[in-house]
Image (cartoon, rainbow, N blue to C red; front, side, top):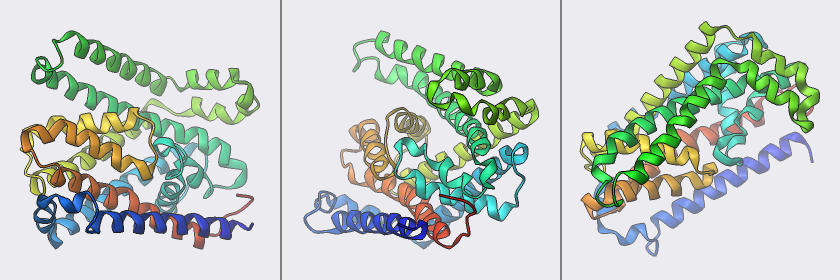
Length: 319
């Protein structure tokens, strides 16, 4: 099977899954259609809201492309357009892997064959930076959420223990991020990838300035993604801003820590949002609709575009 045939098959699967989700959600027999508030919530999503969400999504992925382009300066410098195309192509590949960890596979295809392993290791730093921001923001929100959950959870101790675990994860992540040599040493000890020690040496070439810039871009991308979700929850589900300010980081933290794929992330994010927000709202349909809109604009649509980029892009070397 040729490369184009494989990519075409993946895109076809993505489109088919998208159509299936649309039919199930819009069908009369679907669960969402049975909730009367869903149609009323959908009417609030006018053209201006969709336009704003699309523009913010484009900005979000543009920042991600800039972050990846910055990481590639030590591997293979490239232009902005090619970096943006590679980022979207990685989204199409990442839909089939847990927590979109396979995104780097689609991205490194836009590098020269001899640079792909080095590019893959450099991409790990970008993922670690985004994970660190997610854990720090989610952990902070969790600590602020504790007083509201103490009674229902049976006291502070279980929540405090969980907050301590999240804090340790955040600290360990930052240590590995700012000391990438530790990652290189881990790679050198793993039997299956020990032979890639030379390629992994790129991890030790990033100056503190670049690491700080990548971390800052990760924080900016997180802020935009969070703002999108808060706007959707406010306008579509009528969730107070103060509530969504704490709930959204907790939702992002859960979807990051729980292994999911792009096709199942919607269910996990929607379920967590319902648990956190519905008790005060009673009707879960607007909250689920907000999660669906965020997923469609920021993940599903870029994955479809990335699939077509893979179809049309000339890629050197074997796939």
